[in-house]
Image (cartoon, rainbow, N blue to C red; front, side):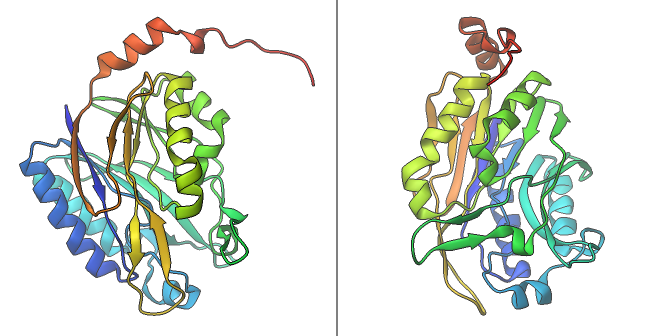
Length: 276
């Protein structure tokens, strides 16, 4: 099956981002893609809480979600919305960082709230406190699709291998890692982490990413690493998208999962142990 990663540079204007992604979806479908994946927070990349509160919506009202569901149905494709920044009804006012799997009829078949929050100080001048504005999820999710079970994760989750092991042991053959990775940590760790998760699980790892300098109405300028990647179950990098926005088509073969797991059946060798 042909699939497509969309590498984009989202602004903090959801309507603008929706128009961009709908157009890219149409082009990807014209090139034969039956499964299309977008990056993390594709509806709004912003460092301003004030801006987020002004433009974000609750899931039931979200125009980006509605527009992308309609486009998936019009094109007859599966769509992973890498994630949307979504308002919640939590009393503390925090948002959700929520990934959606949409079927070719435009229905939401699975949703996943990012579990691990990016609370780090990368450099003296680059600090992130994702948990200040986003509340973490607490449930791992597998989406059932016509082309296999898909384990859904988001960005910083990639540093927590137990999550990916659990998804693979529960039947996932594809793992999605939509991201808006920091350029500093991306250059150091992104490829290594993605390849490690593929090798450990014998899964395809599909990682559509935000890239470049993000246009803003207010707040500090945000930069992301790009380098959307497809990693095969044996650990080969099939696609490295570099840093330019674009559409990247690839072939997804379920047989590659079976072959990798036949050669090194580590998922069947897991043993319980005591300690430390």
